[in-house]
Length: 168
DNA sequence: TTATCGATGGTA
DNA sequence: ACCATCGATAAA
Image (tube, rainbow, N blue to C red):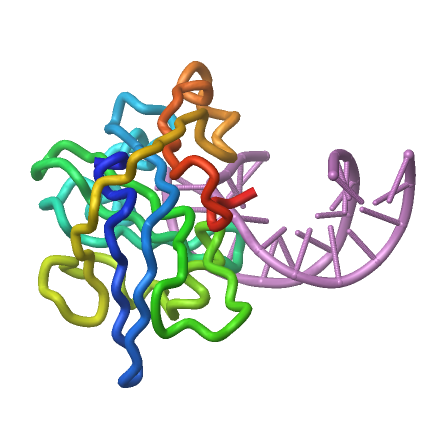
């Protein structure tokens, strides 16, 4: 799913404005056995949504100031998700707006706790539109998960080769 | 260009 | 006591 989501469009409707970004960087968090995945903490008030039905948003707060957006990707009870890390602006963004980086993109799109558990298949407020397959996909270890033991090295980050909207 | 550090609060 | 981060600033 993390690979397939590359090239798809993330659409945000907010205060009468439409923002469209092309997904160029993702990370897979594959389930409770993945020590970097929040589902590995078991079912808690925070992680409950990860174990829910696919297609729902998992938005959580990190480092006291940032919201990160994920989509639940497997069937109910599985506990896996894909994190959005980079968007290429397509429409609606201010000139110079930065949409590279998982926290920057949520800030620009006005995504916060309000959208946690939101059904992304409804086609309102926040949704995903399929796009042409990305030709050149690179992969590598996920960012900022050094604590996750052997899972820290797992090459579960995916991005479009050479795209400048991939985070640094 | 790369490194360091402070901001800031939910979670377990 | 961590932490799926960013931006400003300093160092090189």
